[in-house]
Image 1 (spheres, helix red, strand yellow):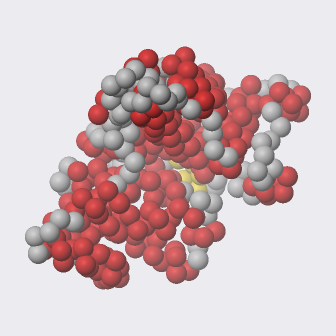
Image 2 (image 1 turned 180 degrees about the horizontal axis):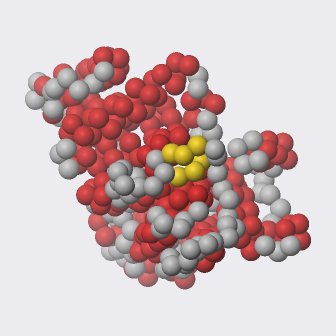
Length: 366
């Protein structure tokens, strides 16, 4: 249903428009609040993928995820309960997509907030100019919703989902959410620049004493579960690779990035990766990881890459590396191309944005 039918119906009837509202279909599920929260998230995710979200859409997204996670945590069995009745059944891919989109919207909101402030501050430099209507409107909405997408609340939900889903009595769905939340938490800490926390967030996945989790008729370790959802494996490998690089653990970084690049190159050759939703982004991320491997191959010149990946690194970045070896600059350009879009979660003082002399970038963000 999720992987096939929903996408087919969307492509046929709602390719560029929103699905019916939750209120309109509430009678079809007898007003089940958890079902409607999942429906809201799913349809919101589709809508934001086909249209540029306005500031109100971003705020609505925040409330949608808060409602969903509050209900999921509320439905979770008590820590001391022995027998539990399962009320939530989601497949691994769906669980990861929820968590991935949650952080994607947080990242987008932080960038939107910075861009809006900068646009207003730029206008304030000229007393004869007034801010564009959409900028003024966005500033007003943002100032009234200062707690929207607050990083401490985002962190709270991720940590709680990990804690609840790793309890001994957790159902399979809650385990999926826990392990994919840890992947998402690792990504978030990387974007915030806390690279040690980014690596530490993955401990629950690589815990040798972790219980196996049921996936269909199979039993898998947390690591096998994550690897079974390619987008999750890719996110983990990329952000762990960046974090290891920033911690100067160069061999660990090369191992994480090199392994996923080998897998992706084979997938590109066979065409398997093109069958996965979101495949249009895979090539871009592959190129970014190759650029990171180019940096690693120069600062840690040991034979840690497979020949085919090493050949791609040389093919794409031989000129840049030659310039670096001759004493010219080049590392920064490679890293700027390859690094994730870091965020500053600090909430700016919106009242200062329209005052003459306001800094164009709040709190030193760039």
